[in-house]
Image 1 (tube, rainbow, N blue to C red):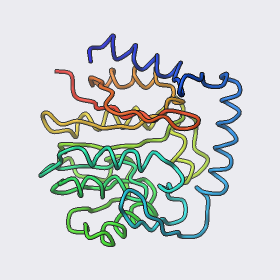
Image 2 (image 1 turned 135 degrees about the horizontal axis):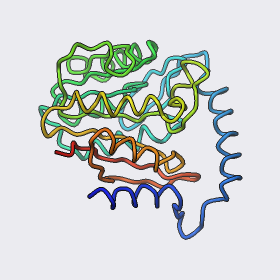
Image 3 (image 1 turned 30 degrees about the vertical axis):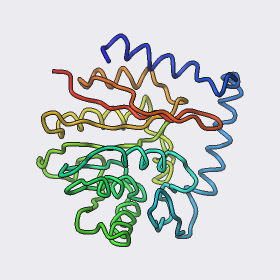
Length: 252
């Protein structure tokens, strides 16, 4: 998709997603609804104090406290099912912001030779390792607690980078809230694009999931500033938003 079409697509999706012919609620109502959802999600899911066990996308997953829960947030299942349709045989993959590790596991199941699961939350890195072993993928999935790629050596590079980053701008209040907020003006996502650019092998790509409630126009600008071309590859409409997966490739 060329630049002007990518910009138009991002802007159009951000301003008008249609749900079976019914328009989304007015922006003020949606903003209030989003604040309520965040409050409830933060208090009762993100900040929970107990470890739970669940099954999502064919995986049995242990989810430690403060780790993004793939059972309650549909992004994980949608992205994992998308990866099931991609040939990753022999690929070197990084999953940035791995949470429970579900995307890293899905990449390994799709044939990836090795996957590094990365998360700034140490609980998430431990969770990803535990889940890889429990699902018979421990030899191909490793994990590291890191802010993006900062804890990794200058090499290796990756054929594919995956990320389902926070959907909203704003300073996270704590480690758990980093699953929801990406910093002012999507600071952490801007850094992701820039670091991913330097970590991708020739002809490599970044798959990233956004919400239609994200500031897609701003994110589109950040993507282009990092030198990527944008292609929308999968969408799913749910009750209050649309989930959007984009393929990003370097513009040479």
